Structure formats: structure tokens, C-alpha cells
Image (spheres, rainbow over the protein chains, first blue to last red):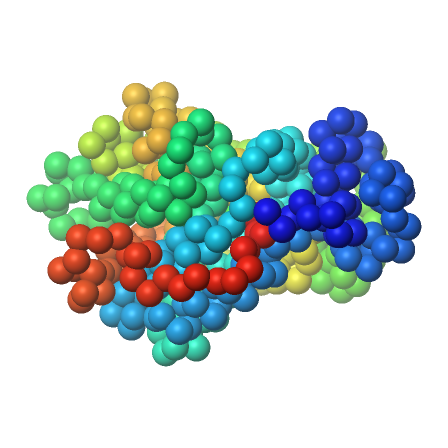
Length: 215
Length: 215
């Protein structure tokens, strides 16, 4: 529960969260947050780069923990296992679900800028896991896939956990998400199982206009 | 190759890309882009909401195509299959790799605001696939997992394809990415295979300080 400790950073986070919930993220200024926390704007900017960062303060610790864990525990035959165990360990040391963490999630979900920042942070987390695995000798490509799947399971698991009224721990929900991802991805249609052709050759129809989209 | 057709939208996209590459995204204004394309700013804003959107113009078509495809082709026993076939079909109708598309990817990669916007767009794409599958009767949870895995494979496959000097088509690279994700996720360590205990119970160490991070 270190996030809500009464130091300046903790007070700023609590103040920001309260103001974002009350007035909305866009209507809150750094000056408002600093005033509510009883510190100067200068103090705010010593701790946080901007109004968005105040909601993502634990991210750096999580990144370095996972880079380190996956490097120390990497199983060259199954790199995904160390990603799962690292995420579950991290989850088991994260704060309990509180009104604050539920509120934080709702504030992020309601604001496009914040959703974007969160996804960017998760991308960095995937890169750090990849780096950890590569450091242990896992091939770059496999490390990247394991890192990306890990972060996907973490994101979906966290979302589910925060939205559910249940006693299940975050670590358990994440573990279950891995199991579900595995079975979703392993599912094969009856025709597919008997058919060595790639899936897309079935049922693909020509469209008259090309799709211009790129991701 | 509709993106580079000499209509106003196509000219605006080409002009934006050229200016972003030359001067940088932050140093380019909508006025600059409009002037280069020989249209008014008003014309720009009739087509694109802002400076970022001009790089993501095909997105809406891709979203509705995939929502529709996954709904029409959903296999209730293996929803992931219709996601794979939909993405491969979409990919096979996307423009060839050109200097333009390579440049676009580099511009996005170099700018945090653009990376964030791209990830947000991919989140919308996952939600649309989920909606399509749900419309066909797939359970919400499984539809969501299939949509998220699909978008992950699409993003990683696209990245790889655009970065590679090879004749392999985007559809093939995406298909291969699914295969690789499946095998990454299916890998089990030797001890794990013989051990019914969850992974995290092995090797988890107590930390003295809780991790404050949330995703």
C-alpha cells in the first residue's frame, strides 16, 4: 500500500486521482493537484513528468523487476514459463484492490490520452521482458513473442481482476488468463484439424476494393 | 494503392508523410500539409480529425471488414480460426510494401504520440473483432481473447514484414506469427510438464518492498 503513504509523491497521487474523478482529467491542472496535496508545482514536477505520469508511477519498478526476473529464471526450452512466474510474483506483491485502484482504472478507461499512455507503458514492459530473456540467451524472436504474450495476459488479467467482485488474487487471475490464451490459440476447427492447408485459403473472397489500412 | 491516388485525401497523406519525414512530426503543421497538397486547411479537416489521423486513414475500413468477416465465418469451436483467416484476407488486400509504407512505419516508431495512437487504434480493432465473434454467438470471454491474440499477431507480423527485405507476403508473415505464438505459448519446461503445480509456486522469492505498479 506504499502508493498511498503520506509522502509528497503519495499525496500527489491521491490528490490527482481525486481531482480526475471529480472534475475529469482534462479539467484538472498540475496547479490544482499540487495545491490539493499541499506542495508546490515544482515538487510535482520533481516527481512526475506530467499530468499523465502521476497515474503510472510504479511502472519503472515493475519493468526492472521483470527484466531481472526473466533473465535470472529463463528456461531456454520454455521462456514463457519464466514470464508467467515473473508476472505472478510481481502481481503477488502489488497492492490489494482498493477503491483507489478501481477508480484509477476507470479514469484511464474514460480518457483516450490516458489509455494511449497505458498501452505505450505496456509496450515498454514487453520490451523489458524481451531484454531479460535475451540476456539469458533466448533467441530474440522467441523472447519477443513471450514478452508480448506475457504483457497481454497481464493486461487482460488485470482488467478482469479489477472489474470482478471476487476474492481471487491478481496472480491467480493472470495465471488463468495464460491458460485461457493457450487454449484459445490451440483451438482448431474440425475441418482444420484434418486439413494441412493454411486457414486463409478456405473461404477467402476477393474484394473489389483494396483495403488501404495499415496497423 | 488507393492511398496514393491523386485525390485530395491521397495528396494530403503523401504531403504529410513527406513533411513528417523531412522536418519531423512535431515540426509540421496542418497548414504546412495543406499548402504542400495544394488544398485549404478546411479541406484537411474535412478528411482528418488531426495531424495524427492522417497516418491512420485505412483503419475504419479494416475494422468493419474484420468485424463483419469474423461474424460471418465464426467457428464456435475455434473462433481463433476465423480471426486468422480474416486477418490474412485483409492482409492480402492491403497495399504492397512501398517506400511510403516503410517510411510511415518509421515515422510512427520515432514519435511517442504516434505510437500511442497506433496502439489505441489496435485496441479498437481488437474490440471490433470481439464484437464480430460475439455477434456469431461466441462467448464474450473467448471472443475477447481471440480478438486480442489476433491483433497481437497482426501487429507483430506487420512489424516484421515491413522490416524485412523479403518476398514473403504480409498474409504469410501473419500466418507464421500465429504459428510462432502458438508454439511459444504451448512450450512447457521439463519440470513443469511433470508437475501439476502452478508455475509461480516455484522459485518465488519474497521481496521486502511491495511493488506499487499497476499496468
